[in-house]
Image (cartoon, rainbow, N blue to C red; front, side):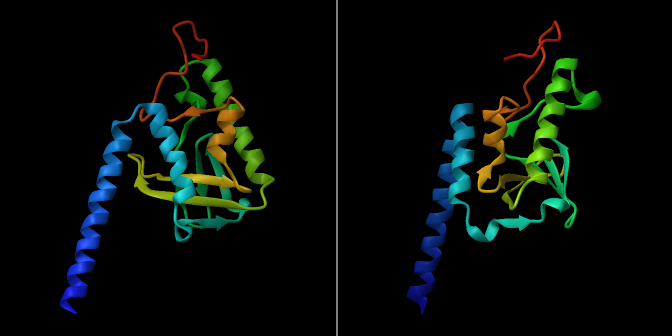
Length: 169
């Protein structure tokens, strides 16, 4: 019995050290690699962390934030950044792009057969649960990036507008 407990403790310690090493590598990687690593986490997420929700119970806050009305949990999409909407936008071009992203998310969700909210285990400074959102088997963040409505998250907010009020590519 003592051998079994020692082995279990040793394996647990190894798992913790291994996870810490992977976290360090992910944090020290360049921003594009970090976004890619975050997207890869989706494939390796355990099925127990995934929760399918009724599309009618999702409220779209903006292009990268949704709320599950059945649980009152607000989710921030882990792998993207979308332009701000309303008064938070720094120029009208950003506001327009943010509004288009928000409408696209509404359309994707309203037409969905299945939505999965896959939390990463992190909470942001606004209390939002950081998660991958999968709509009918497709990563929502990747969909918005492919449609030119989002960019990969690089670990911090970056400006969308230049000094003239034009979008920064």
